[in-house]
Structure formats: C-alpha cells, structure tokens
Amino acid sequence: AQKVTQAQTEISVVEKEDVTLDCVYETRDTTYYLFWYKQPPSGELVFLIRRNSFDEQNEISGRYSWNFQKSTSSFNFTITASQVVDSAVYFCALSEARRGTYKYIFGTGTRLKVLA
Amino acid sequence: SAVISQKPSRDICQRGTSLTIQCQVDSQVTMMFWYRQQPGQSLTLIATANQGSEATYESGFVIDKFPISRPNLTFSTLTVSNMSPEDSSIYLCSVGGENIQYFGAGTRLSVL
Image (cartoon, rainbow over all chains, first blue to last red; front, top):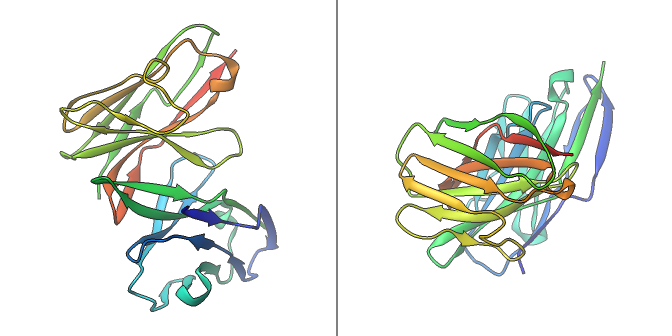
C-alpha cells in the first residue's frame, strides 16, 4: 500500500542553523508525484515543491533544497540558514492515480521550531 | 494556481447540531476534495466531489455523516452532521489533480 513516513515528529533548531526534514515513501506505481507542503500556524497548506517519479534532479530554491532518491525512496527537504518564519509543520505527500481520480497520501508531518 | 475561499474560518458548535462548510474556487475545476485534520494529526481524505455525480467517500467516512454537494464547477459544501466532540478538527477543501493540489485556509471546528 502507498505510505509516506516522516519519522521526525518535531525538530528544534536555533536560527541560522541548517535543518533537514526526512521523508520516506512506499508505492507500487511507476509514475507518481511527491510534494512538500508547509502549514504555518494560520492553518493553510502552502505548496512548496513537486517532483515526478522520472525526475531525480535535485532542486534548490533560495534557502530551500530537495533531495529525491528513488533508490532509497526518499524525498528529503533541507532549509539552509533557518529563520524564525520557517517555524511550521511540514508535510510530505505522495499522489497516486486511482480509478480516474487522484489521492494524496500525507505523512504525519514534522513540526519545525526555529528559535531566535 | 487556484484561489480557494472557505467559510466559515472557524466555529464552535454544540453536540448534536450540524455545520455546513462552503468552498468557493476562483476558476472552474473538475475535482474538489475534502480533508479532515484532527488536532496534531495529518490530513485524511474524506471524499472526492465531482460536479454532476455523487461524491466518492473514503473508507471510514459515510454520506449520512458528511453529506457533500457540488452544484457547479466552482463551489462545494461539506456538512458535518450530528456533531460530537470527536468531530473537532480542521476541515480543508482542495482542488487539483495528479501533479498539484491547492488548499483553502481550512475551517477550524470545535464541538462542545
């Protein structure tokens, strides 16, 4: 069955430290998408990044970077020089095609606290 | 991208009552999704709502408890019926497909 595991429940770092959020997934599909979403205290889910299963190229966007490795079924997210505004819950998700529609499987989330 | 508006943003309700949550999208979309996020938990899909057909419910969710309407391509409602304190959650509406989903800000529901 499809599954997304975020083993880190909560991480605390001091501002300007680098932090990596882990995500491991399971799927039988050969074509799939992986995502990271940010959920600040306001509650809205903010889309950060998407990767399809055929694109293992890592990506950097400002202080954010993502490492996708199919060999280990991992899609990790690194924040460089963390800031207090990065404090939020981060969700990793996998989309699966199913009977003409799509279902997103979310991990349990990692709460990141960045301390000033 | 899509802009999604949810109403109400939060509510406090009494046990045994019902609440209808509205979701409005700024563009026409085929599929709309309703999720529940219990306190401190991840998101769980309640149902998928396509215009012109009955919603498809996930295991553990039933139409009598969570009736959904989808009258057109930009609007949907989710009703939480006969509420109990266990229904206290954030309910989120989303739109999209395989390669992206956009979410509303959610409705924070507390049931006393």
